[in-house]
Length: 136
Image 1 (cartoon, one colour):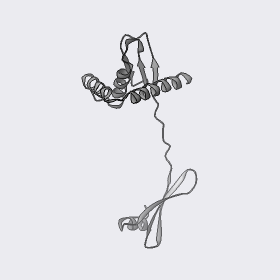
Image 2 (cartoon, one colour):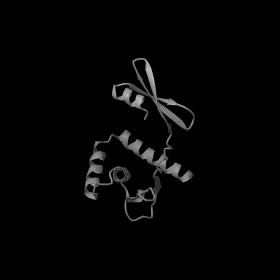
Image 3 (tube, helix red, strand yellow):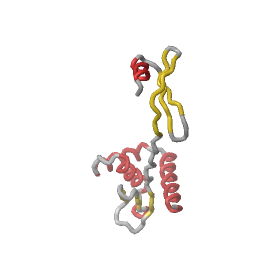
Image 4 (cartoon, helix red, strand yellow):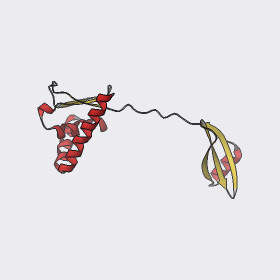
């Protein structure tokens, strides 16, 4: 950064970002009514993480599973206890470091604390995600 900008920043000046054009911006330091420009910078493109696909699979042998590489969560409603299975697989997705015993215990505890309305919302969200996955 330019020396005047750095000096202003070290002195506690307020840093503002000013858009130059659609691809560039510049930081400006303001202190004591004076402004000091930094160097122009390029905007970084944000990459969107691939969302998980939710599938219903009545032929699978287990209650549910998750494939982190393919970003797929499958649930077998024929086995029963769909709410617990969805919670279980979501816990695997959000806490990859938890072992199977910890995930099972936490899913059961969460389900016990859930109201009927919250369980309905969880199931509705799963069905909506499954429906949107089928459109892709």
